[in-house]
Image (tube, rainbow, N blue to C red; front, side, top):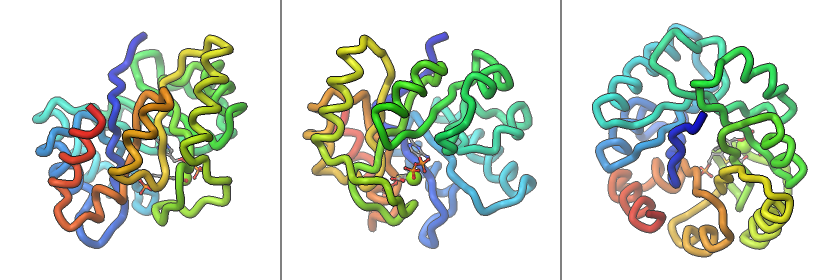
Length: 210
Ligand SMILES: Cc1ncc(COP(=O)(O)OP(=O)(O)O)c(N)n1
Ligand SMILES: Cc1nc(C(=O)O)sc1CCOP(=O)(O)O
Ligand SMILES: [Mg+2]
């Protein structure tokens, strides 16, 4: 089943400047169509309060809502998909649990990981880190532009059709060289939500990528 996958996924984060709800609202009002609510610090009641508010915003703006992990919340709010951060997760089992209609994203730091994600039927993969990021400190080697070039070439050679998003430390000036590698798109958080003018930062990303 084809899912709604866009070239730009905006990822919310715990930051002092804007709540997750504010981040989703600003991004959607600037044109975001694909939001990942990434909150790993709240209990279920707090998560559902946020998710219900963000789902209503997404509904108003025609955006698709992905939630990071927390798959036990499936069916408890208007969530269109889940991004699973556990790279060793059994995606076949998760697909059985969530069903065909739910978008499932996975993460990888390696080509081998991407190949496994594709074979287990994820709808898209976050592949990173592109560069250093404070959003989630990461010990994996930085991929740089050449890491994407190599991985996309290898996926093509194997005729694997998996939408790959570059993630981790992506800034506005990285978009053009990254998109030239043949990736499907970009997932970004801090370059947008930590900008002085978040709406302008989202719009600049969007204009550059579309
Ligand atoms: C689109 C997208 N990509 C990646 C992540 C986070 O992935 P994570 O599992 O944290 O990756 P590593 O830090 O282990 O490299 C995400 N939430 N969304
Ligand atoms: C959740 C997450 N993990 C990442 C990693 O590289 O491990 S990047 C990321 C989200 C994107 O972060 P930003 O755009 O702020 O660098
Ligand atoms: Mg990470």
